[in-house]
Amino acid sequence: MTGSDKMKFSTRAIHAGQDPEPNTGAVNVPVFFTSTYVHEELDQYKAKGYWYGRSNNPTRTALETCLASLENGKFGLCFASGMAATSATMNLLQSGDHVVCEEDVYGGTYRLFEKVLTRYGLTFTYVDGSKPENIEKAIKPNTKMLWFETPTNPLLRLVDLKALAEIAKKHSTKERKLLTVIDNTFASPYLQNPLDYGIDVVVHSTTKFIGGHSDVVGGAVITNDEQVYEQVKFHQNAIGGTPGPMDCYLTMRGLKTLAIRMQAHEKNAAEIAKFLESHPAVERVLYPGLKSHPQHELAKKQMRGFGGMVTFVVKGGLDNAKKVMGATKLFVLAESLGGVESLMTHPAVMTHGAVPKAEREARGFVDGLVRLSVGIEDLEDLMDDLKKALATVKELTPAK
Image 1: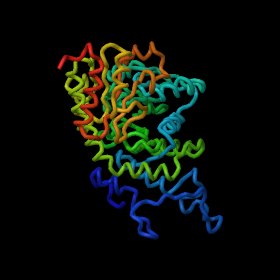
Image 2 (image 1 turned 135 degrees about the vertical axis):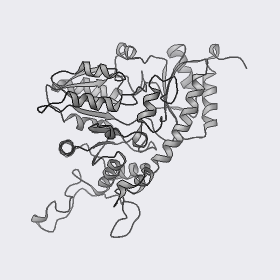
Image 3 (image 1 turned 180 degrees about the horizontal axis):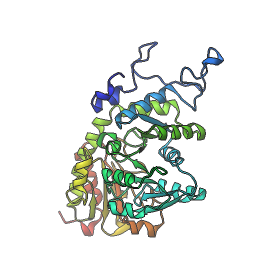
Image 4 (image 1 turned 30 degrees about the vertical axis):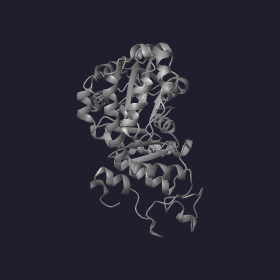
């Protein structure tokens, strides 16, 4: 859409890359169910920009254009899952390269790095990225990438985006550009744009807040670096982890309401975090919007809001955590996050089961830790659901 880069976020989410279909005037981008495209003559092969369904699809192009716009990026690429997006990004590296990574990283990312990519000669050092000095100390002569999440999964730590970009620039040379990658899934483009702080690559699981309705799996990579874009695009096509047109359509439909959904997620999450912080059955609450969060000021500085994810530790460990998780009705026990419905996850068993217990506990998430993806249901109903569930930990709940 002409001039869409000058429009506000909510408008771009609905219109960027999504002009009415020229032949019919259809308001919605059509779902182009096709595996191949006809060419008038051999000399015109690829002239239209579309030649094979794995390589490109008009529905996918619309989604990629919109996501790039929302992240203030020049180039966007979509994938069949967040892990497919992660895998394609890691193909920017080669055997012998070293990566400094957030220690509190998504379990699937850890599994890919440690169980798959180490077999191909990549090495990884995991650090607490909330302290920039930890990142700099871990850099080696063969370090080629800094991979971080902010907020992290599940401890909701932050990395200082500006400091990260400056560290990478400081340690880059003519022979080696130290790439920075941020998994922006938890914040979404609505609350945070890492590229604005000098980050090279942004990765998303579009399954989560971007899609927003727990009905489609996908991933995305956004960058301003044309060379990075061309390399990732090559691997997108060569390896083939691309989304189907229906997946792109559903993601794009969800994307249209991202702004208003994120506002509702955050409003509910903020009140729930305050409630949990005051409850006697809760040992600790992690939410960037709380003043008790050690990086609350950084969150205010680099985010436009605090998001819909809340993590808390139930007193009494795993047994009491099980009681709470088994007693909720609206907060359903399920993996994933970012949908309109509220979800409750036990990271140690579910999303981070691939991380050895000793490493999990050393990094700060114990068996009593529960992660909430706060939905957009009525706040009163959600609060009532949690109150009843926490009341099952009777010895820690005050008498009425």
